[in-house]
Image (tube, rainbow, N blue to C red; front, side, top):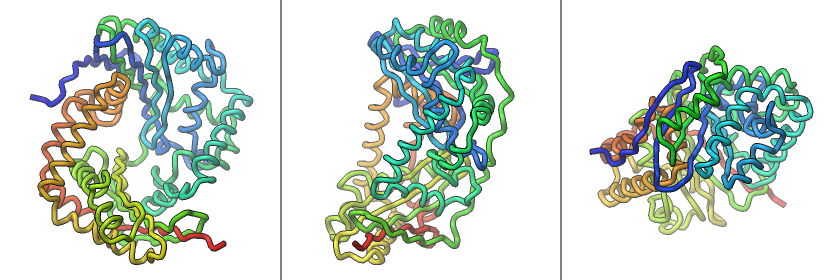
Length: 423
């Protein structure tokens, strides 16, 4: 028996829109969630940052909705809405009382069908400045703010789809015209490149009727081909980069290439990184922070990507007086030791925590709708929501050890070192 068995019904409209409905009558709310198969890896050279820019432009208005009215209408109905962008996708979502479900669907359909009518120079300029301010606040003016950019540059070739951050280049955004962004919208925002998930207090029949009523008349467009997803080989001559900035602690980062997100070997690496870095009882915190007194903090993360190659990175922030060379060697040694396999208690703790986290996510209708969107867009189908936990539970300690030995070797790790600026 599956560990989770959420009901779902999948349908595809004539225009290519995939619709997933999962009734849940425990509360009179509905989660409306749209995943589009466009992220920063789908951007063209000289036009980076467009996927994230549209996360903002989609709230700037459309033919039937004034700027700011989407958010205001949802909030006035007692709901909430937002959007996020990653390298592989962009998603838009509302959680509303059941009586406002049709409003949310109408708003989503209107901007999918008519957003170019509001894509004028004024709206582009406004949201371009919003993105610039976000970059200043999240990247430029915070300690370690450019870590992700460095890690991507160390892991991927400059012309690789994953070789730049989702925030993109401000020079590229400055050069963008309304025609440029309209072309990007037309290329990627159409029914055949979208998944609509409806989870909550709706019957399948009612949900599909609403989806057809608001989306069926929107024409599809030919979908542009996805970027090359050929897996990259492991780093054999990794770069060792040093940057000097005004940071509170000197720090060391290690990064490796890894299999794509849905590869069983990557799932083994995810469990392995949980054993190494999840919580204060994990290996890295115990060894580097408490036992060896080398670091103020330490951790590791497996960042799953669908375009052939993922990223794993480990970090440690040095205690005062600790050499970054010594810290790097200790971090490499502790990560490499996972190739000997987890202990019985480590394995039990990691699998139990994963199960708790997954079940906790699925307990809320909004997160469940998001998981259905991800499974349908990136993982082959909505049924994966009910089977992924079993797939993780089947991973053995030996498979974790093998994955660590194959993918987390010190000689395959690029290195980023932050040194404190001398005042």
